[in-house]
Length: 177
Image (cartoon, rainbow, N blue to C red; front, side):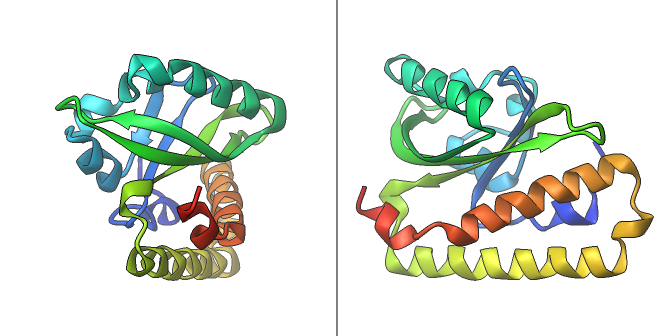
């Protein structure tokens, strides 16, 4: 899958990001997601999202998928995630839908916050990243969007929607959930 300029905003991002298809199979992720789960990226792609949560969290993950199908997004969903070594961490999932050029649902952009790492410093880093990434997407829109192919426009639109959602999240409040 070629890297668009829009997706490059996620390459070394401080957030855990993944893209899943409409049945919950991971199509892409960033290095932060892979590192936090203790896998190589190649071990993650093509695998179902349920492999990254302990069995006792499968119902919460399933409920998250149902919410996403019904509403097109998931916000503030607390789910326990499992690393390759078997250890777990409390995560907070945020997801927005991704559509193709014909408005067919093709997947989601999902961000997961590790709640055990939500320090004031980390929250500030996230907020600065969200603003910087959103500004970079605005630059892409202004300079390049009209020349993008349909797939790249779809990806841009999905990421823009994701960052707008993330900018509206009160991370300090989420830390206390």
